[in-house]
Amino acid sequence: MDLLPLFHNLRDRRCVMVGGGEIALRKLRQLIAVGAAIEVIAPEINSSIQKLAREFCLTLVNREFEDADLNGAVLVVAATNDTAVNRRISALAQTKNIPVNVVDSPELCSVIFPSIVDRSPVQIAISSAGTAPVLARMLRTRLESSIPSGYGKLAALAGKYRDLVKRKIADGLSRKAFWEDVFEGDIAELVYAEKLDEAESRIQQKLANPASKKLGEVYLVGGGPGDPDLLTFRALRLMQKADIVLYDRLVSKEVLALVRRDAELVYVGKTAGDHPVTQDNINEKLAEYALQGKRVLRLKGGDPFIFGRGGEEISHLAEYGIPFQVVPGITAASGCASYAGIPLTHRDYAQSVRFITGHLKDNSLDLNWQDLVSPNQTLVFYMGLSGLESICRELIRRGKAAGTPAALIEKGTTANQRVFIGDLKTLPDKVREANAKAPTLIIVGDVVKLHEKLSWFKQ
Ligand code: SAH
Image (cartoon, rainbow, N blue to C red; front, side):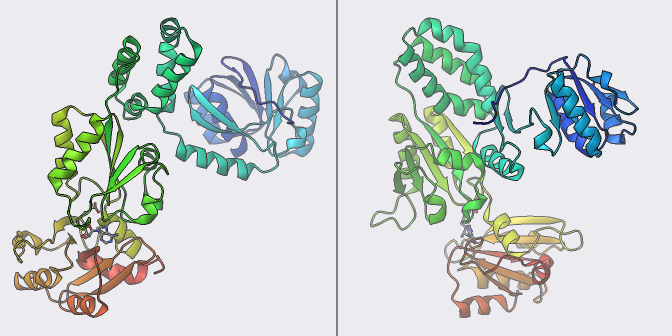
């Protein structure tokens, strides 16, 4: 190991920044964030730094660097574009034993600025010792996406109870188990969901009765339209945490593959074996598993609250007092529209968009057609494949022009996506001839014209 990472308390300590340009600005922001007393020395100081100086406690000194500037400094950063000056500052600082950083010249530095993942009070510093800053930044991005933004709050909460827990649980191993349970379990989830009061009362409860059987919880999670890259950070985290996963037909196998490997998978889709699982049955199962103390993931395609019956499932849980949280997903309309290059709204074509169920009830569609044919809006039909002909026919009959552009997107966002473009008159035949299969989404309106220009996703 060449360098020792240390976390430095710079609050109100004198830090000297030599340089007044863009590079200096970046480092200044970091120094400001930790409350340093900063002096900026440069013959020219750019307007962004001047603006910072008006907001924060920066002293600006408009002249060349002088040796005496280092007096009393605990850190100096050289960010000038003059190599000779940078060298001089580095040498001088090192003879005075003042930590020095010269931007983009690792050989002149005695300290370097790491890439930081900030979940204060938790911080992660990453460095490649100046060899590959881009790599350090990439690593940082990966960590950013896998560490919940509420981590800092969780740590702060733990800090608040640290002494009390120490007093109540004398045995070190039991204490470790206690904290692991807090950081991995429902208490952490409550913090991430911003329910800090509840999280605190759960900690107190757990302390009062450490052996108490914990109640399970349910995560109602939107798995998006298919492409696993479209999952949210939170969805992915909960997928990796769940003990049991109830999923249905629309969840893509690529998404399902990201669920924790030893989680139990339960298929509750419409064509589940000989015994299709009814909605009541699913509602019951969710409650049953949670009451057994399990972390139950209800994984749904798209967004759980858009044609997903998510509301019914959690209202059942609410009746039992089972804790749950809902994680939105990218709904098919957003996913398919983006991947087909069809903006759902557009200043020239559509000022509003409607999500409509095209599901046939008793072979007919019971919709408010008068509303649907009014101009300047985009219509998006979910579950409309078998009703496509009726939808197009009825829109024309109620006054929509037969030439209104219309698209059908099959298996949107996946490697098997197909997009069929036509109009209300031609689309049904095109789709029938191509033998499109569910899931498909129908988009009707002038925005469909943009597909030709904006289509980007390779099929
Ligand atoms: N909750 C889901 C919708 C469930 S209803 C969501 O928010 O997306 C099921 C309908 O969603 C399907 O009939 C189809 O119209 C649409 N759908 C879901 N995934 C799709 C996909 N990858 N491509 C096209 N349509 C899709």
